[in-house]
Image 1 (cartoon, rainbow over the protein chains, first blue to last red):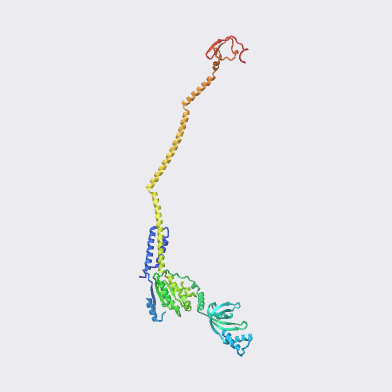
Image 2 (image 1 turned 90 degrees about the horizontal axis):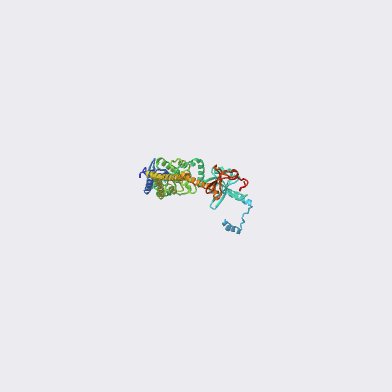
Amino acid sequence: MNEERELDLERAIKEVERIIKELERKDLPLDEALKLFEQGLELIHLCEERLKQARLKVEVILKKGEKFELTNLDLAKELIKNEGERP
Amino acid sequence: MELFGSREERQILSSDIQPLRFTVKEFTQKIKQILDFGLPYVWIEGEVANLSHSQNGNLYFSLVEEEATIKALIFKTDKRSSLGDFELKNGHKVLAFGKVNFYPRSGEVHFIVKKVELLGIGRLIAKKEALLKKYRDLFAREKKPIPTFPRVVGLVTSLFGAAIEDFLKVARESYGAKVLVYPVKIQGEGAEKEILQAVKDINEHFPEVEVNVIARGGGSFEDLAPFYSEELILGLSQSCIPIISAVGHEIDVTLCDLIADKRCSTPTSAAKELFPEKDRILQHLDLLRRKLKKSIDIHLTAYERELAKTKVELIKRSPQHNLQKLETHIEALKSALRLTLMQRLNSLEKKAEELKRRLWVNSPQTRLKLLEERVRSLRLLLLSLSPLKPLERGYALIKSYPEGKVVRKAKEVSTENRLEILFADGKIIVQVLSVDTNSGGSNE
């Protein structure tokens, strides 16, 4: 998944919480309230979708001189074991 | 002791050899000699207990190991040179350099300490206290907030320890973040340098990392040394990315824990801190959804109420309603008017009645009738008072004739006068023959 486009759960949940707080204002015009309500529901839905697809991604940073390489955990373990000098 | 006290004792007592004989003083001197020559300056490893600061400035304590104890003391004059800056405490594991001394007067043996070196936790704690003092401001600085639901987390740990397994196990149950592992040596010499380099590299080259976790699994306390290093705390305090330290130990909170923005007791708890269980997030989302619905319901209900109110207002203001209201008003006015008119009429009627009555009373007819009545009664009265009335009873009225003047007394008459005598049924004219005033019927 594209990092940039990935839903920021924290921000989304905070946004929903902000929407709820906004909705608790009594003087809010109805059409605005309905708009906020729909936005909130949409965000919750997106969060749930995001959680359904959630999968932890683990990468290991390997330093090669001044450069960095990202590799998966098992491969990194192998590489480091073979080097024998890394932890 | 028991051996000596049992078999050897019996052997000696049963043999012919005479044991040496001492006075107490001689014997204590002997012990002192043996100890002085037999035990020169030594290092003793043990734990500090029963520490007491004497009034004379000396420091008394015991060095203990399991069931064994030896009393120790540091003379006031040796305190500075033997302890340096740190304060000795009960429980410190130490290596004490000194010499035993036997005091014949009390019969006690004391280990006179000339130099103390802390071992294990004690050494680290002493170092920690000194650094805490030195960098007080650094430790008191404001901590950076730990992001909730971070998308990218840096994990600085060994690839082969339990820490990474524990951490990732919790992380897998969560919402699916990305963990960038920076492998480092987590114990032993040079570990602090690797940890520092990792934190520095992540800060400089992986800006997407939102929080760094320095994790270390179980291990002996002695392995914690890197987390008490001055270099490490200075380096970590420079990090722009918040740091969670999960390298602590049950016995002590390390300097790394204290300089970090958050301390977690284990890698597992650090992961739990960062990655709430997926179910918990889903529950939270469900709660948010309910809250959302509740608040929109409140709005809708309020709006409905408002609408109903407006409807009522509208009906109130409609022409029909106004007409009706007007009609009612007119009706009310009408009946009020009717009432007023009736009242007025009534009062007029009453007044007319009164006038009529008064008119009647004062009408010519009535007055005539009254006059007639009056005349009639007057006539009757007059009739009853008529001077002729008594005539009916046989009296007669005498008048002069022709003058017609009523004659009341005899002396009013002279002879030859003519008189008119009136009777009830008629009159006669007579002539007076004589007048005699002395005799008569009346008193006069």
